[in-house]
Image 1 (cartoon, rainbow, N blue to C red):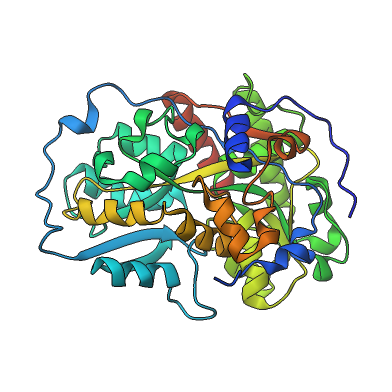
Image 2: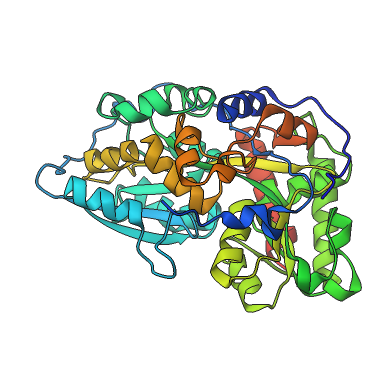
Length: 416
């Protein structure tokens, strides 16, 4: 397929750095060479890192006594379709291997559907010092910044995590919201764009405008993360989402989304559970996350599931592993985080989830698993790939803007 011509914009320094660094078992993703990866060119952009937390912070807090030496247990909260799984079973080969080698009994929960909804559930407990019965939680950069600012996650002992220190990609080592990576470790990064079933739609979808047609009315889902959905719409309206835009541009995008809901084009605005609508056939296209569509193609055995980035651009985001302030198993958690920064382990996960891998050395290990995937721009994007496809990051919001725009999104879009 010939890539769609795009207007080339200068990429952001964070995107350029990540691409330059990232460019340097059985694969679940052999589908990448077929219809699933055959969508037109892709673009990386997303939730830009929020402002750094105030000085002082969590390191000065009293931490609960760590009982990892005597309690070999760990509870990990993650998003769905975000870990290697053994076929149709619900067991992860890499997690099973960790259990065996460490002696730590890990309980894995696919319970994060949306950053806001998850933190709305656990945040009040954490701020009150009440145990949420989880030792690792996985949330996106901008929400990670909020948790660090709220002092509800524990500092990490990097000296206990040699793989992380050695193998975390250089541009990720000093995130603006967590300087020095003292409270969070990148799990995966990924894209937001257009996901659709090519056979059911009957054509290629190349732009957001291609979603708003009569034959797709009521069969479109969009993400409840406004930095992705509103960000993509803003790009389609000619806004550079990394630049100095304001409330007027944001509300224009929200008015458009609200209109499409009212007109019946958008079926649902959902978190990770949007996959249920695509799986059931109630929806056939939407604004989605990249790896989810690859998972969907594999799980359904339908290679016509396609992910692409609209001609106007897409978004790139990162999710992070953190230890809640109430956990008494921090060292068990750190051991698991460090395990997943072994390049061979990271490559095995990446071969299944197909998100951008944050681990240096994983690309070489991927050559042993699936040489085609080692060349995949979905997993190891090059700087040229990002620049050619208008990869942007949603600009940093101040604390006041974060509250304002979240309220606007909630009232205008989520209230529908």
